[in-house]
Length: 114
Image 1 (cartoon, rainbow, N blue to C red):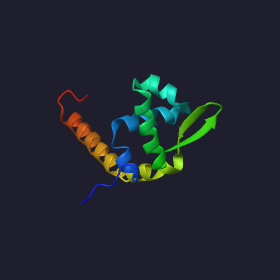
Image 2 (cartoon, rainbow, N blue to C red):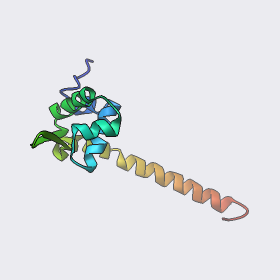
Image 3 (tube, rainbow, N blue to C red):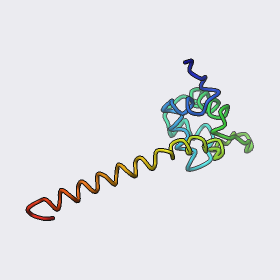
């Protein structure tokens, strides 16, 4: 099966760790490229390239503020990622409950009781 281009699929776009890091920074605040460059310790062309991919797949929006281009996350673009990962929430909740039940059962079996 052929892999989708990073510029056409949000899931492939966020497979790159630096793009996920950019999204983490933008989830907290709207930022210009220069701030992302400083925070991430990358060269400006690299950050701009990642931002373009994120923008092309709809995960990031941009607006002009004077000379600066301000970037922020696009909640609607991120929604499919969120909904997909949310399908696993029940699984994790179930796993955590099983761990808790095992720990409590083990504690009851312990001669010192807990």
